[in-house]
Length: 179
Image (cartoon, rainbow, N blue to C red):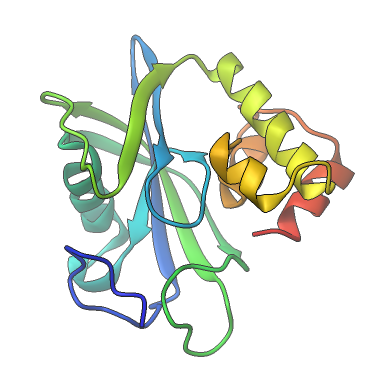
């Protein structure tokens, strides 16, 4: 069983997730995930008991980085066949809602979930996307990727679709094979 300390007790995947692109004048908030799967990512998590996708986005921002979400704007809703650390029930994957958000309050990252939070400008995401593509192409081992991660693989297609990173279709397809 893969229940992590501090988890709400769910050990089965509910197949629903939210992602939250929190923006400020300093850029987008991203961090290295402290729990599997490895990668640089914005706030994200399962909907679980949070209620609606919007409520889950607000709760995940508070849980992971200590921020209060003021405004949410839905950017995309889609199914992604990504694994998670929970026990799957049914098909592997998640229905995702990805939001853009404005947030307030002091940044208080959860040590259980967040390493090295940083505000970066969107053009700084590209090198992380390229590192993930290098990993997906087999030029980096899993261990090398985990030691110095690129974007969390599930995030590459989202960010590519939102024009925040640019990769060739074949690279995005290869990355889809490692989500």
